[in-house]
Structures are given as C-alpha cells and as structure tokens.
Amino acid sequence: MLAIYKRELRAYFVTPIGYVCLAIFLAASGFLFSLTTLQSQTTDIGSYFTFSLFLLIIVCALLTMRLFAEEKKMRTEQLLMTAPVSITSMVAAKFFAAETVFGAALLLSAFNVVPLYIYAEPYTAQIVGNYVAFFLVGSSFIAIGIFMSSLTENQLAAAVATIGALLFLLIMNFANSFIDLYVFRYVIDWLSIYARYQNFTQGIFDYNALLYYASICFVFLFLTVRVYEKRRWA
Image (cartoon, rainbow, N blue to C red; front, side, top):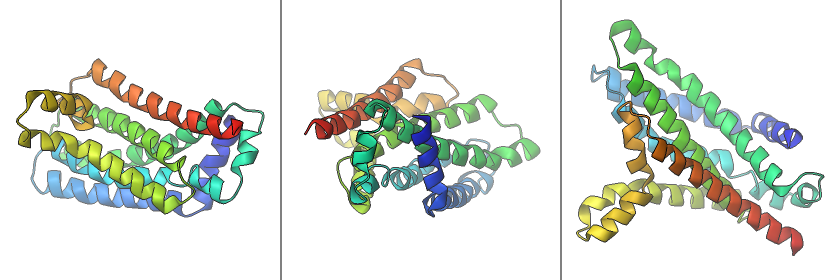
C-alpha cells in the first residue's frame, strides 16, 4: 500500500497536474478571500468557504480523474490487480495520495486568514470549523471522483462525470426552497452535502455530520473496490 501511495503522490508532481491543481486552488481561493472578506471588511468567512465549495468541485475532479482512468488507458491496471496487495489497499493508497495533495493545498490556503488576526479579532472556532468542514467535504468529493474514474478509461469523461455528480449534490440544498412537498424536502435535506456543512461554519462540531461525510467516503471507496473485484474475477 505504501509503495502505491508513494507512486501516486510522485505522479502528481512528475506530471503538471499537481502543480496545476495547487496553482488553481491557491490563486482562486486568494481571490475569493479578498473579494468576500477583505474587501467587505468583515471577519465572517462563511461566504468565502461557500463560494470555495464550487472551486473545490473543479479541484477534486482534476485530482481524481487520472487515478484509475489512466491505469486503464495505459493498460497498467492488470499489474496493480495482480500485485501482492489487496484491492482495498490499492484504492485506499490512491485516495490518501489525493487527500495529501488536497490537504497540502488547504493548509497553504490557511495563510489567507493571517490578515484577519493582524487587523481584527476573528472568531477562531468559526475559522477552524470551516476548515474542518471543508476538508471533510473535500474528502467526500475525492472519494466520489475516484469512483467515477474507476468507471472509464477517459480522463476527461471521468472529470466531467465527477463535476456533474458533485455539482448536483451541492445544489440539491439550494433547490429545496422551490419544492413544496415536505417528504421530498426532507429527503433532499438529509442527502445534501451542504446542509451538513452549515453547523461547522458556525463553529459547532457536528458529530452526525462527521459520520455522514465518513460514510460518503466509505460507500464510494467500497463501490470502487467492488468495481475492481468484479473486473479481477472477470
């Protein structure tokens, strides 16, 4: 597992994809922070993270599109499936490699909030809550993106499918106000990734939300494992 993890992590920076993802995320997050927080002269960073969720969709799609699609295209997936490591370990290694790059980008973006501590007195619990929630949402997005990548050998198709799925999950909550039936609204609210995100933005650590995001990761990584187990025995 460790060998695959190192291989995937190295692959992000042997090819331009790792640098592109970091550059896009850091540049766009800096611009959004300036626009929503610094120019508004507020310490409330809720709007910054809400808009950043849409940026996160693009970044996670770029991070995950090649993880399995490239293996199929280059015909190297057979080597992975016959390697002395379980499919679960292989999927987990790829997931953690993408998580590492995403975590590094998020950590670097934390320098955006430094001016708030220099010129104001921000609510630290809210800032920490937003970063924790953002990391959890990003982890869920990465797991979904890995599953999409396992279904095709075309990286562009994997990226487009990931963006479509993540965008749908994100805007479900915003569509709730247009639905009259309570049952549908309840189901959409329960499934919505954004609805679970909101408690963290107020500095409240929501254990139910933590379990929800962990479940999303588990389900989609499990589905990815099942895809490859089926392919191995086929």
